[in-house]
Image (tube, rainbow, N blue to C red; front, side, top):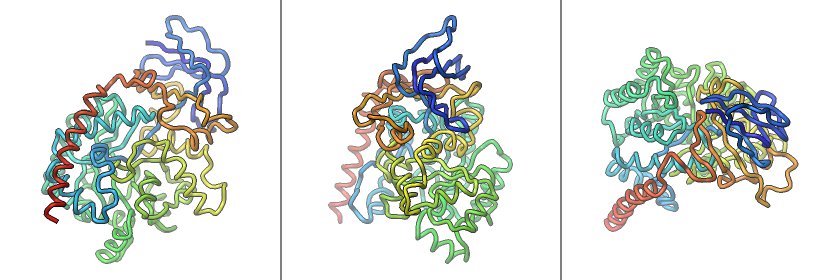
Length: 440
């Protein structure tokens, strides 16, 4: 199949982040054949799509998510102890393969509608997550969580490794799904298990490792009390602070931590909205990027940030950096878009395949309408994307040369079924919450 998208504003998100005011993109099979400026060439047999002045750019990358936790969106929002009162009991009672499938499908639908074509996930029953992601058509780096707090799908580390190996066995070599292992966090995994994961990872170099790191005051206190160290040092001691490690949050990192992380060549998934909503602090993103650490923009799970809409992360990412710097200059809009595309792809180790519109890369792209009054006039297209564009402006989504959404209609998922299945699980949650409240 050959597709020629013409008459578009093209943001290829290549090294120098150019803006092509009138450009075109040629897709051949699952890859980008060519992209350029001016009138589109005539290509025999190609389907011609007139973008009518809309924006064409790489599909966005969300490098940290808990997809199935869409089922917990807005639950117990104003209850101080909601984690222990509701979330953990509900997870242990109801998070089973069928619930994970329902929540993941809801997340995939939301991601596609919002122009996200690649996502990193860490949760339970991750093989089920991978199956839904494969059906939905998006790319995923999908991590089986291993933790020591009696999670829903394993009671011991041995069982957690068995689930990871099953995930790897089923999806090794998959064109869009990359199996991953996900120690939950230093405090919830423990140094012995992290050391075991480090050894396991050496024998599985193609399996990415992702984890939460330096996220909360409680984690900082645990690391100091238990090990006399900071969390980054604990992970380094365990042998996990290594090239390609995907570190989510990294709120509480100082200059020495950042030096260690940069030297180890780890990557960071920045969750400005969920961190701000929880009052946990502001990550020193500018300092990490200046040190050469790849940083992508992520949503976290919908339990924490309520939405998997990457556009709604952009303004907090920019504004938090400006607050830290007491200036309008930090985190310019062009850098935010860079983080959401090419840098996010680098965080996931996918930058050789996606993240920019370049010949030979996978044809993962989105078409974004610029017709809303809230987007006009346009002086800086990057500013328009960061501060004025919303998911409903995304018209079309393509992954690997195949359309996942055309004209706002998602083609790879049955919308009514996805919503029905998710709401059915939510009813069970509501009934259990009522029971919990009744017994005090």
